[in-house]
Length: 340
Image (tube, rainbow, N blue to C red; front, top):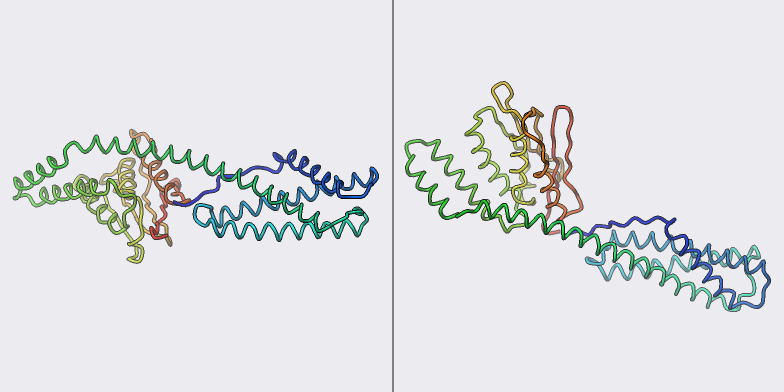
């Protein structure tokens, strides 16, 4: 499962904390100086606020970058090492650059030990970084907890629907086999029963699977489509154009079946308006497309598409895209590499 970064807090929200920290740094500098007048003290307050603003925003930017590039749960060692190096180098550059600039213009004078002042600045920087990390950890935990609750709820609802459908699998398959033997003289009926039996068996076998190969999914989709062709005949067509190199990539089970079922459910299929469903790829995106021929008496609930989007959120940050034009409806789903 990939990590996401649901964090976005504005610099305006932390201005009071920056000002307070700046004054604290100013007091530390003033305590290490020889006696100075009011103008000099004001200069050090300005210095403290300025260096705190630079360090705070710089640390926040670097911590955001490292959380995206090296998430704690995936690369904790790299995250820690790069963070320590980046923060240290950045702080030294800011502190030394600001110190020499302000000394040159006469704003700072009377500091007893510049090295000690820079060391203290480093300690304050590490403290500020710890605050950023704590905020990020809390936000990430809160987001993951909320998402896990949503996924658990969706999983419970899906399991409930599955249990309702699984009355007695063995009884169903035995009944289908018996029915098949009774209609041997009708090849179309036998084929229909075999397709239905295969589709139901696939439903049961994938119940506990999180991902299946695209090859498996296309095979069962073809099985399902043959069942639908028994109802609609040549008025329903499906065209699959997917290169073999993508067949080993994965998607959540029954994703294609749900999308095709959605096309059939919401569109008119008749001699006057036959429906063609296209399935093709654009790089590592799989696209399911159909011409819009809306049924007026079928409400759009969106439950099927919402279910697909929620299941994808567990495996990747990339979300399925739903595109609708005046003439065509299109859904783009990412193909997943389970090894990554």
